[in-house]
Length: 115
Length: 109
Image 1 (cartoon, rainbow over the protein chains, first blue to last red):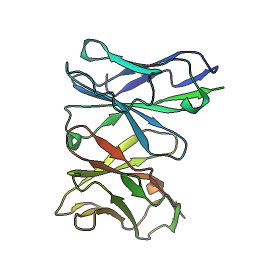
Image 2: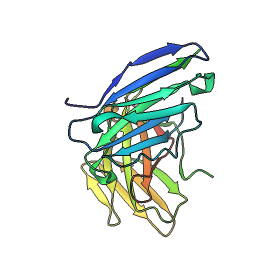
Image 3: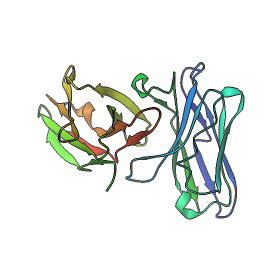
Image 4: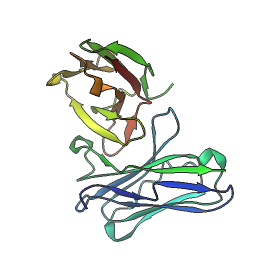
């Protein structure tokens, strides 16, 4: 597609439920990132995929968070047993390579609200 | 201490004003720097890269001071459309990119 596509755009879930967030990067972009942005805060790095290499998961806040990227394209971020502190906007970005100077293209995000 | 720190603002300026933002970074190993712009409830978008020699793009000028570990963004002749949050970004090599919390700018008529 022309840009990074994320779905759903909004998700309201009950505490304790599992959620899946989807990211469809720009075709041909080998690098894919997940960030989290809480109200009034900067972007918190979660996980990074580059091509077929093992992902860097160093930013995942707990073992309730996991992500995968199938076929080097679409990525799914899964949050198990959601907590209220998980409420945030989850942003996906892709870039042509892992070089940040090429710029990241962000999707419009998934606004997650845990009630 | 946060790796990348910015004054959250908000900066309220009249149209035509010149405004400057400063962003400090704590990791001296940081190699590349960027400014992103984020409109309300929208995703961040790359505004410009920051080079050691400075970088100018129209009304926008970005500079890097490695000795004091800060970068700056200068906006001249502010427009209403410049109202947004400006995110400072530092990269320590590879993919590890740290975003600041942003500085909010409101340009008033």
